[in-house]
Length: 466
Image (cartoon, rainbow, N blue to C red; front, side, top):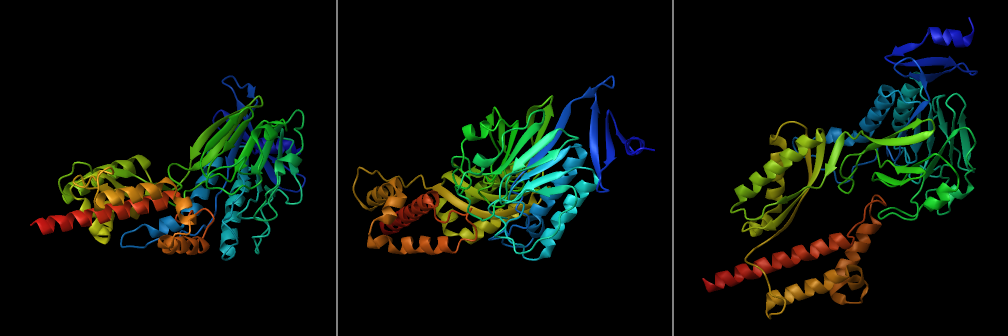
């Protein structure tokens, strides 16, 4: 029996679609998925699952293991998300998986990180699904001191120059280049080859495009630069939020597979791209196993601490139920409330009360990362046009908040401590993704200080009057 007939005999029926295991010259097999219409007519369709920024085994800095906290789920979240990616690829019968950089978070602490990834790629190999990946700034060749051979279905694109991986059976050409070093500041896409005729051309690139807030300017390029290559789809990585950059050609950042801290909120996952007669259509596939959220709970008009906590209970319960998975929350209380002084004066008690709410609501596990108090006292409303201590506080706050960075750069000795603190904290930052004491954080810290000072002055005034 010839190889093709043998492959047909070993086919696996999957409803209206059929996947054939086609023997290759190297002794391996590759799955070909034939999709049929209602009357058995062959449809020219190709499914590609595009992921990026998996950051496998990324450490969770600041993880506080309080009683009842789902610490193990948080620590293993990046691994479980990759497992979801593989399961989805098999379930949705995709023809190809592409990974646009930062598969790893950096050098492996030990070989278990690499072994985990190899095992997942091997599962795709068993399912007959090929994988093309490249390495980005976090897992650049210069960053990785440990390596393992990848399964036969997996192609990692080289660092020296752009390369093309052809899949003749699928009619696909994937073009891309890995990072040789962490900081690639040149336009890699400029050297990518032009599209090949009669094939679906996919560009795989780890880039910031022309710039993205919170991300280093790696492999910069413009959409016009990408369009000039004539590709059908650009599979991008590096930006951790989902972003459909352009529709002609379809250019997508799927975002990272799993949020890792309070600035990576909301659903995370991959992009499933379906080419019908060569034309791509994309849908977001949510794959995160831990959902980071930053809820603001408005406690305005609450008359007591108990009412504040009841409002937290209701809003957090609704949020966790909607997420349908483990949640990591940074909870911020806002609004004018007569409980403002108590909320600000007892931060440890308040943090643990919110943790207790998370533990008692049932359903999906909840981890409270932080509780931020941004409430105000309705009785403390300084008029900036008046005089006195409260007005002076309001005036200084307005001046500093107008331009935080400029205020710190001025040689004002009263800001030396804050300036030195920011410098030291940024030097000790565990990741370039962390903006330690950035403008927003400093502005909020100043507002908190002004609110606390105003409350204390008001309390002193009340005591003296009594």
